[in-house]
Length: 248
Figure 1: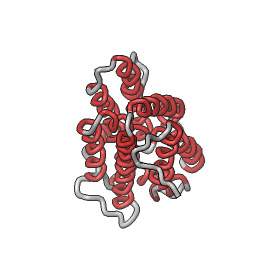
Figure 2 (figure 1 turned 90 degrees about the vertical axis):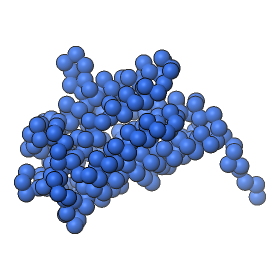
Figure 3 (figure 1 turned 135 degrees about the vertical axis):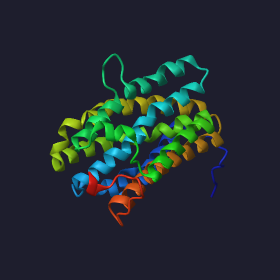
Figure 4 (figure 1 turned 90 degrees about the horizontal axis):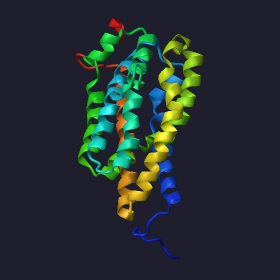
């Protein structure tokens, strides 16, 4: 029986299939914290902890994208990629993803000032998000772009989440604009990023680096939920200085 050399370049569809397989195995839609959320088994305080901590990740997305932009000498790429910053920062009085996430946090009962301070973010969440900034800043531009390909899987998760939130947490309805916007933004962004990765991964080694970067991004998302689960589900031990449900 012949074997395929690891030096043989994957076709575009083979590369897509490998990336999709990463998502099926490692994306955080399978994390126990998300499973509890989608089953309606989280309390309002636990949803507050999620919204407050996830805000730190949301706030750093345009920073991440600015780092990627700064590393490119390709004007065509920069023009396309800067859309992501606008989507999250907003423009001309139109709210972006960060402001929309604040509205979600407020719908849980938190104040915007409390969320914006980031003073109560879990250390594990902060370290994971900061590791993402290090990934896009210190590894190759190919890996930086490939790490964004979790957006290939996010639309399905967002659709599921919207249905679950409306069913189990109707008091969040006023804060769901972030998710409805991402239903169209994420697939568009993912398609551009995939095409770019596929065309710039010129060797099998490059392709494996791209796949590895996506695995690492999935681990970063998973680690954030690990911190939330440990602190607010089981065993329920938030570290000093972090958000505490009984004081919400």
